[in-house]
Image (cartoon, rainbow over all chains, first blue to last red; front, side):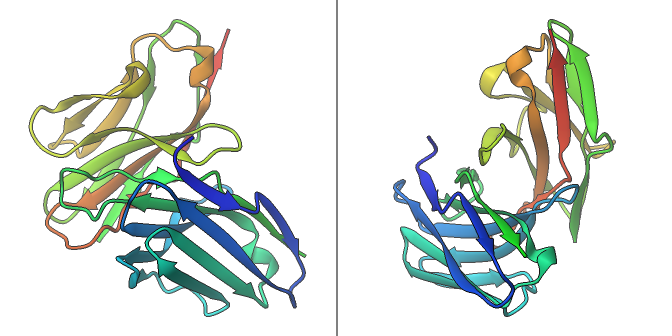
Length: 115
Length: 115
């Protein structure tokens, strides 16, 4: 295993529901990421947190709300999603990048279906 | 701006034959280049990276990649493919001089190794 755990593995939700995705890393990293993986599209970076502070928001709609309470945990809160938001959501972690330690560790993802 | 192109959606190869997965990139300045692999129902796993130095980079599972600055390419290669190499392969780039840890991925290439 990679040391990055995501729950749940699968999630089906209606457009009016509110749900949260959870990510936990046991690697002592200080940077955490959310990526979206849709079929036949490049992996899309959504959010980056460094030392619990959000440093990147890649123009993500406000129906996706990230939370990073500490360096080991990352959440993605979901509300009033659209069917096109159905995708595999991947969490990753790394050391803060200095050029020599550039390497992401990914979780197995949450497969989200919005009905 | 930075971008990655993986021109082949799928590569088919017989077991024991050489495997090549193509990647070209566009970045302002000098690149950091990466290959990741995704097995079914798993997150991405790091294979190898080019940061600086020798243009030929060796990575996990017998894979290697060659950085070609003039052709802006970073093709992934393996001399003798195994059935277990069947997976989705992603190339990624980041501008070396840029601050932060924003990695841009290509669309992925599915590799199918037939016995």
